[in-house]
Length: 232
Image (tube, rainbow, N blue to C red; front, side, top):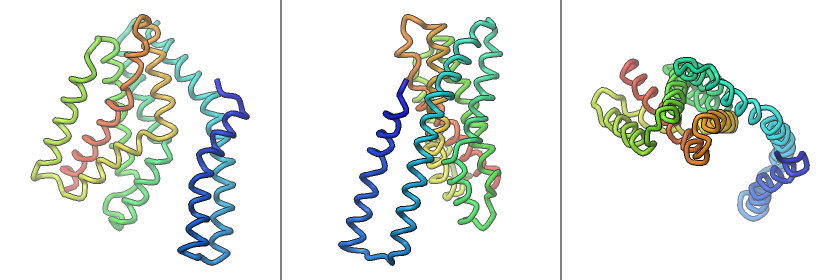
């Protein structure tokens, strides 16, 4: 587990390049008002402090708890319990994901309320929840991930090429798949999957514990495309 000092330096290394780049552009090309630069620097400080606390929380709380839950569920001996809680956890972390809220707010704004914030968030969360459960089923039943990925993207592109999908929903759907791979969902899903794989597939945990995010992110794509059919 990372120490607090390591986490702080990780944040510094992540934030510093963009900060330096903006300042270089400021004093060579764009020349924004001083108030805007000051506002940017204050924002950098707030982002750095917030991100540091967030990452510390992830390492202290989300990762260990996610892995412990994943390790405990197979002890029930019931596949439906594992899949049900996989769906619930996938749904919950998506609703809590900041990136999803940013996307949904912009979609709401651009569409003038035609696609409301929660109208987008709930289908995205349901889609991710279903595919997190499918990811766990892959581990339980030893299904090759490549076939699931191929089948999932065949469905995605079949829907995207469908004449019943309004064109504006296609880019939104792919953005929805991207934002669900944010700082809240990814650590928890990975830790949860590794926890389950460590119990059910202890001999091959490194293989079965990964690929979960890639598979789970297909769910929001399909969910938003289906939402397009419904609203269209």
